[in-house]
Image 1 (tube, rainbow, N blue to C red):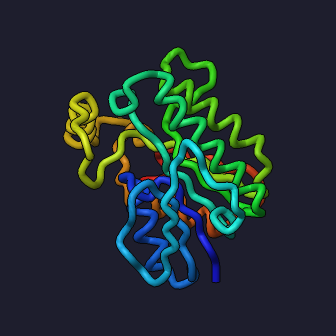
Image 2: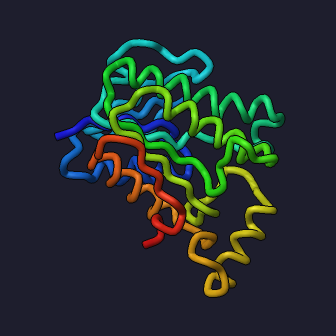
Amino acid sequence: MQTILILGATGQVGQQILQLALCHPEIFRVIAPTRRPLTHHEKLDNPIVDFEELPATAQCWKADLALCALGTTLRQAKSRAGFYRVDHDYVMTAARLSQNAGTPAFGLVSSLGADLSSRVFYLNVKGETERDISAVGFASLTIARPSLLIGGPRSTGRPLEAIGLFLGKHLASLLPQRYQAVSTLQLAGALLEAGLDATPGLHILESEQLST
């Protein structure tokens, strides 16, 4: 029986990971630090935190597996600095706290095209986060790089993404599998399965692997 830590449990992918974990017969405890309370569940430990000042107490971070779906958009963050703070700094702080507490396995939701040398700011930040996560020292690290995601409702409108999803759905047969939209449930399931397997080393789940 295992304990799992979920970061970003209120987001699209995080909600799916949370529901899968709560129903999983091999998981007996789920730790999900959030800014606002989650629905009560007998397996769920839901510390309310401020991601600007995360508590360092080990009981918040010690798990058999940590899965991170933290992330925002430039529109929500309102600046590049704000986006970087969430998609890099929050992720790295939580990852280091988790590793310092003895968590051996970590899974991260990144993005198709993540590249430290990319001229696209979003992809550059994702690439930097991947690089820095890889240096933390987890015995097992899985990084998922999904294409556009389809799933639950967004908290705010994303018109450009909506156009991309519309084209992705209706032109799917014309697109290489790598660029086809991936459901949030497929992504959550693949990341959870890989994390529970906890094969030593670094493992990259490319977008085409998430939809099979």
